[in-house]
Amino acid sequence: MKLAIKQAKKGLGLTSPNPPVGAIIVDKNGTIIGKGYHHRAGEAHAEINAIHNSLKKYPASVFKKATLYVTLEPCSSHGNTGACTDAIIRHQFSRVVYACPDPNPQHQGRAKQCLMKNNITVTDGILHQEAQHLIRYFTKGLTTGLPWVIAKSAMTLDARTTLPPGQGPWITSSQALEDVQRLRSQVDAILIGGATLRHDNPHLTLRGKYARSNYTQPARIISSLSGDFPQSCHVFTDEYRDKTQTFTKKSLRFILKRLAKQGIQSVMIESGGKLLANALKNDLIDEIVFYYAPIIGGGSTQAVQINDISKKLRSIQMKKLGPDIRISGLIQQP
Image 1 (cartoon, rainbow, N blue to C red):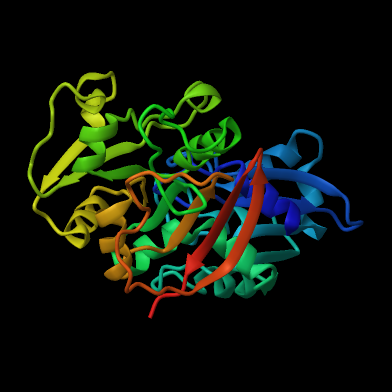
Image 2: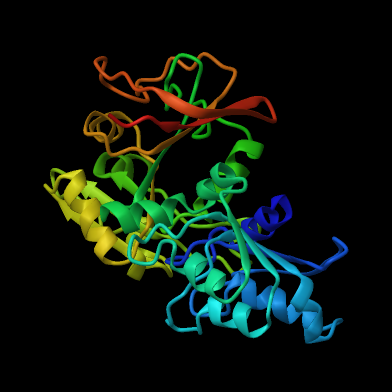
């Protein structure tokens, strides 16, 4: 299952609105004979790709005593592609092991029942937590009607998101900036406030190797109380201007619901101060990713301009990126 999860990670940022899924096929001797992952929405699922991968070297008869490991319960309904359970039954697999049940209540457990009726042994829940983390965007959208929201910020040790005039625009190192590009490649939209737009005039695009790959440029969402959106800003004039949306005097919850109806499952807030504080106060943040630079900034802008917010984090991770430290975690909702 660890190898199946590794396969699933190859689809991060590429499969929306579908979840990333990976699959591994092992023969009766424990030898890996096939592997695959879901490449893009509308294309073959992980199980089908793993089957096709196996058939390049082995006859179909090998599946009769083989085990299929997959990170998500195989689909049992017919969408743009055929049901994976039909393919599994048709190839007469001996056993299926999956990590997460389908988060859709209407489909959850159907694959297990269907496969067991056809004399296929089914085991579920293996490495559930790790696999569930991979589909958290998909699961939240399906169960709540809201996108998964990540709060990202870069700051100094004294929690400043800007430096004094003349010290340059970047707080963190090139390694941290590269990691932000990785994060952007995995979300459907980036959201900032009007003040950030007017002060920084950001591009909010994928750059470097992420721009040259198969990743889709994220939507760019601007929220403002004043409605002051300078039309000369990059987000209104560059080649991705059609991906820019503006909202005036709308609550963040309203904006997120509207984005979810558009099929957007994940949003990264790249704005500090009032917008981030508002999102935290209203329990709209699911995950935080903060980059700390080893400097005392003394700038005029704090990461969160409010003092009465207290949130508990779980699944906390820390990683050194050049001279900086990235701290990430999931927010424990009330």
